[in-house]
Image 1: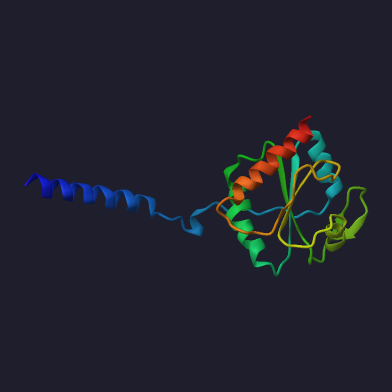
Image 2: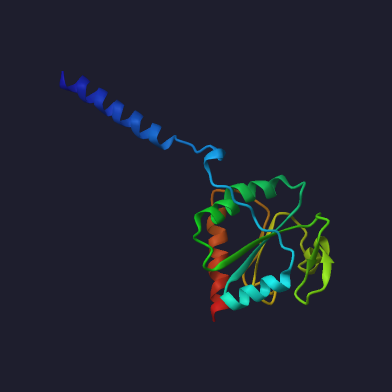
Length: 166
């Protein structure tokens, strides 16, 4: 009598535990966030210098499906969390965009020309820059697996912040 009762209680406990973890959030339930486009790097670099922040620049393309995955699964959650606003300025540069970008010197150039200055060959690429436009941490190329991608980004940000804050 006790064994069947114990079995049913354990089964019920396991089922409720797994069902609690199976809750998924609908995209409509999440707050809307947008990744700011890079338009004026000279103003952004001035902001980074004044606030002692690192610039994380996602270089993407409109046709890049992996870029959309990176944005939805990594970058937008970073923005939603608010955990990165103290130390990081996050921007996006679409290399096939028609708009012009002010580079570090204030010169207006195309997005693809800006990307060429950093020798970007693959999208997405994450760059970690100081206020002078220098890479302060190892860039992240492509999206291999999302399982550890967030930790790779965090590691790059920590390493870059060490360079900036010294």
